[in-house]
Structure formats: C-alpha cells, structure tokens
Amino acid sequence: MQSLYTFHSFPSACSYLPEETSRLAYEIVAEMSAEEYEDRLIVGWRRFGFTMFQPRCASCQACQSIRVPIATFRPNRSQRRAWNGNLDLRITVGDPCVTEEKLALYDRFHSFQADARGWPSHDPKQEASYQESFVDNPFPTQEWCYYLNDRLIGVGYVDRLPNAMSAIYFFHDPRERHRSLGTFNVLRIIAEAARVRIPYLYLGYYVQGCQSLEYKANFTPNEVIDANGDWVPFHV
Image 1 (cartoon, rainbow, N blue to C red):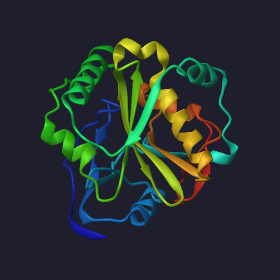
Image 2 (tube, rainbow, N blue to C red):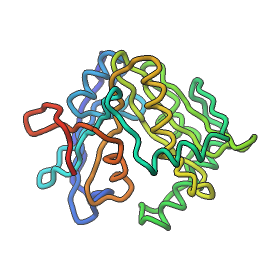
Image 3 (cartoon, rainbow, N blue to C red):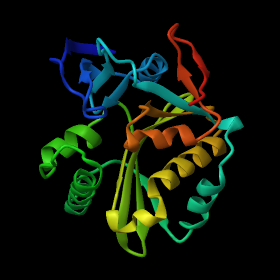
C-alpha cells in the first residue's frame, strides 16, 4: 500500500446523530490491494475511492462496524418478502462508470432522503465527484445495476475481497421504495458470497438511533467489533 497522507477532520455535527459531535480519521492512498483493504476492514475502516476513513469521536462510540457471517445467515420474513417481490428485476454486474442516468438517480434518491429522513440538504452530484467516490478505485470494484424492464432503479457498489465482500454504497429510485431495494441489494450480495464461498459480508457502520443505518442489524446473525478489537456476536 502506498499511503499519501493522513489527517483528522475538525469536530462537527454528526450526520447520523445530530446531537453528537463527529470526528473522522482519514487516510488517502495512491495504491492499495484488495488484501490490504480487507486488513483495514477487519479493524473498522471504510473507504470511498482512494480515501479511507474511520470514526474517532471523543464522546460517542455509536458507530459500530458490522458484518454478516454468510454460512449462518438466515433471512427473516420481511427479507424473504423483499427477495420474492423483486424477482422481476434484471441485475447486471460490471465495472463502475458514470452516466447521466446514474447521476439523476443519485440526485433523486438524496433529495428524497433529505425531505423524508432529514438528511443534509443535497447539492446535485457532479460527474467528477461521482467518479471520485465510486468509479476511481485502487483495486477492481463491482457495480451492481438493477433494472425494472429497461429503467434503472438501483445502483450498488461492492468490493469483492479475498475473504469478504463489502457493500460500499447503494441508492435507488424513491418511487420504488415499496420494493425494499436496499434490503434486496444486501440479500443479493449475500447470495453471491454464498455462491463463491466467501465467508463475510461487511455492511459498514451500524448506528443505533439512526434510522438509515439501523436496518443493518436485521441481517442476522451478525457480528460487531468490541472494545478489545475482536469480532463478537451482536445483540441490539
């Protein structure tokens, strides 16, 4: 891995829990292998593009890295319903790229989330920033596109690593929110991990009290990192 520089953000209002103060550690890399990134995932880092980050908040430990052991996962009733309700979709998996259709879908999703869930006000995503977040990566990343007939209704980015898959980000058409597409996307990644015998799916951070992230705990059984840095069974 070739690290360019590291830094900490200034303390600011947390986007997950507004009453808390957030601070992140960042590391920008020029080169990094999938194996090296998996080592970082195991100790709680995440990434967008060439930028890795990890919470370093002084007074709050609500962000918990969460992962699903594939061999023991069992879908609940609502997850089975989401699976069965989306069998009419066409899914393509390929290399990331930026298009006007994806930018428009990203903007519709974030505008809806800002209105419905109080996310920060959204500025339209520009091609350069989309490219930096999702398309330019230090190792190969998968782009999962979900189509209803010929209409793009969901896009997810997924890392396939030696012993894990990592769900980077997913956005969808808010007009199709009755389909529970976020849940379906995770279920499809779990199914793919099982098919290729990859033992873990990393889902990023679970934050109790943040509606947008609490759903991750529903993929059970699952594990989080404890105070000693060990992965242990998670109980909400």
